[in-house]
Image (tube, rainbow, N blue to C red):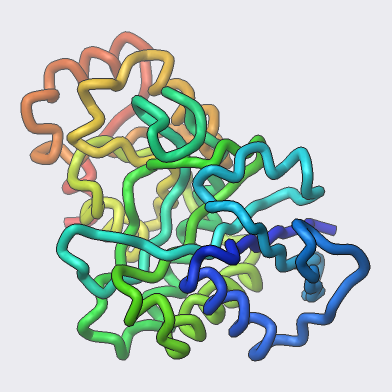
Amino acid sequence: MQQIAIIASSKDPAGANIRDNLVDLYDFKKSDGKFDGNDIFQYRIQNKIMKLYLTNNDLIFSEDLDKKIDADVFIFASKHRSKENTPSFAVHAIGNWDKNEFGGKEKTLCASSAVLLKNLFIELNNVAKENINYELTLEATHHGPFVGKPSVFCEIGSTENEWSDKNNGQIMAKTIMNALEISGQNYESCIALGGGHYNQASNKLMLRTKYAVGHICPKYALECLDEELLMQAINNTIPKPQIVLVDWKGLGQHKQKTVALLDSLKLRYERAQNIFK
């Protein structure tokens, strides 16, 4: 029986919104015990047990939750901020290509389930398709917390208006539950290099192809990329990828360096644009 932990923060209105809608829309029941003094709710479907946890800490600084919560997969329900305050829904893997200013460990990537990320993004696009003014996107791998199990962030952006909108909480709650009901998909796992933080190449790969993207290293982080980090991205994407997909134009000035790294590690790679064109 697979154990899924869905975690929100009492400091985060978007996370609380998603959590409340999960309880309202689905048959979550209060279970024994508490976490951070807060009730835990449980729901079982097929071969999965989902538990809702509420922490009193900021999510991105809630390190090593896998040592406190017995689960196989961690889903963080969270708010998203952007400089442009763009209304959005986003999902992404977690970890740091460089410094750990926003939680996690420096130059450390957490385990990422490429299959779960793909299912979440597909379902998000199905559930939120009426929200034409919202951006639906994968983000590059970034921020904490550090977790020793496969983990993903599901976010509502980007202001208080969007975070507290009940309809947005319903959309993300349905996205999470729909994605968790899917199993046995025949995807090919990969990692992606290049492009923007809101990674358009990966969005297209997820929606148009058989590929499931785990970790994403955007153009701005390529200067930090080395053999050790590249192998972390491969080894910490589940299932382990047999290919690296490259946003060729999105490599910018780092084309030569990136190809040299891939060649030195004898990693198979392909231009993403050749696959989804």
